[in-house]
Image 1 (tube, rainbow, N blue to C red):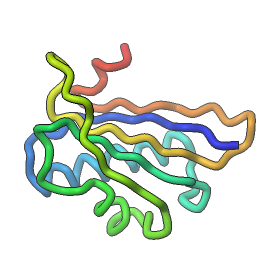
Image 2 (cartoon, rainbow, N blue to C red):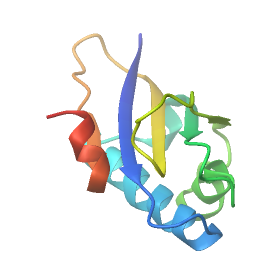
Image 3 (tube, helix red, strand yellow):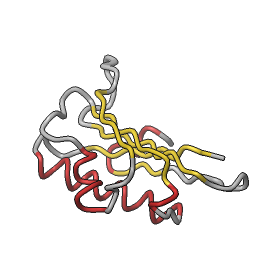
Image 4 (cartoon, rainbow, N blue to C red):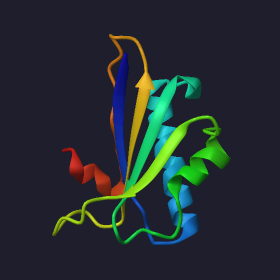
Length: 115
């Protein structure tokens, strides 16, 4: 069985360092909250709003968190008027048992997405 775990975080500025720090913070929290073994991850999808283009978040998952054998893709989020700016979203698709209940993680300004 596979299940998806959603997460989102706002990024302070459109720089490589800010995207790196936000990616590591969000992924680390998602892994911790869901007790994820990286070897159980099927794939990860990253999306960024159009105002974030200084770096690929998958790069930091691979280099800093050991995701070197995980399939990952980065995309731009649909540009919907009045949507949350500078937002990084992550979908982890996890190979898991049927009874696994994913815990979604929303940090910083992205907490407003799921009240």
